[in-house]
Each structure stands twice: as structure tokens, then as C-alpha cells.
Length: 245
Image (cartoon, rainbow, N blue to C red; front, top):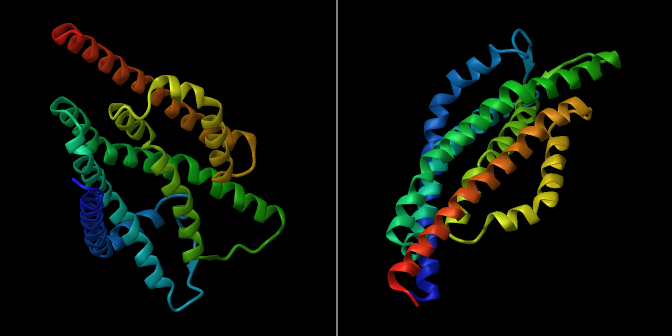
């Protein structure tokens, strides 16, 4: 294929992903009510009065929920389209091996979603409300502001939980290897700690509770990359023995 054919193929894959995202948003509009009702019935917002400060707040809230639900539905499609795009460059065994990563994209995102919602968000929320009480401020929360604060925590952390899958996929494509990942360890730690500090309250315990799992994810990614890399070396040795020089 020429470079223009590759660009055309990539364009087709991107369009399919966008169509799935739009379809997911339509589904999300119908699912927004039960999801919203569940979330406002849970701590820490249970019993709290949320206010609308604009006529568009209700519509904006539906769109926020629709986008998050669409993201959950579109991620496996995006992963599959990425695999389908690079498939011609892979051997038969590599095609089968990398295709197995696609279901885990959704699984890791859901795990990250649960971790950020049930662990990280309550810490951030309680810290901000404690500061408001300490300053004797009257707490009146807008529904858009509350859920924007919530999703700004949930989405980045959930996407970061895709790190092991991405690294294994790139290792399978021989773009990354464990040696390179180990050399990047200090930089990776710094970036992950910065992310942990940004999305949590500015106290050591909260920062550690978020940064530590992210660093652990990176180390798991390095370990999984090593497993994939060793299998590649063994396959290369077998090929050398079979066909020789």
C-alpha cells in the first residue's frame, strides 16, 4: 500500500470509531437517568441538594453522562480498529496474540473507573468540603460543577489503567521492550506522581494512595513486557535454529 492508501485506511478506522462513539452517546442519553439516580444515592452526595445555576445545566448533565457511557462502549471498538489497522504488518501468531488484548481494554477501564470512584473521589470530595467548613463557608453545589469535578477525576485515572495493555501491545509490535521501560522508569514515576498530585487533595496520604497504584501499574507493565519480550526472543531463536543463517 502507498502512504495515501495507509492514510485512507486510517481514516476509515477513525470514522468507524467516531460512529461508535456517537451511537454510544445516543445509548448514553437513555442510560443517563438510572446512572444519575444511582450516583446521587451514594455517599458522599447522598442527601445533598444539588442546584442548577443555568437553564442549560440539565442538558449539560445528560451530555456529560452520555459521553462517559459512550467512552466505555467505544473503547473496545477503538482498540479493535487499532489492531485491524496494524494487522497486515503482523504475523499470524502476532495477530492472534495482540487480538487477545482487546477485551482487556474494557476490563482495565472499568477497574480504573471503580478505583477512582470508590477510592479517589471520596478523598478529594471530603478534603474540599472540610476546607469549606473550616472557612465557615455555606456549601451550595451546582450539579454541573459537582459532576465536572467527579468526571475530571474519573476519566484520567480510568484511562491510565490502560497502561499495562498499551505497553504489552507496543512490546508485541517490538516498539517497546523492558530495557527501554526500565530506562524510562524515573521519568515515568515523576509523571505518575504529578498526575496523582493533580487529581487528589494536596496532602501526602491522598497523593500516596493514588500515586502508589499508578506506579504499581507501571511496574506490572514492565513485568508483562518482559514476559512478552522473552517469548519473542524464544521465537526468534527457534526460527534461527530451524532456518539457520
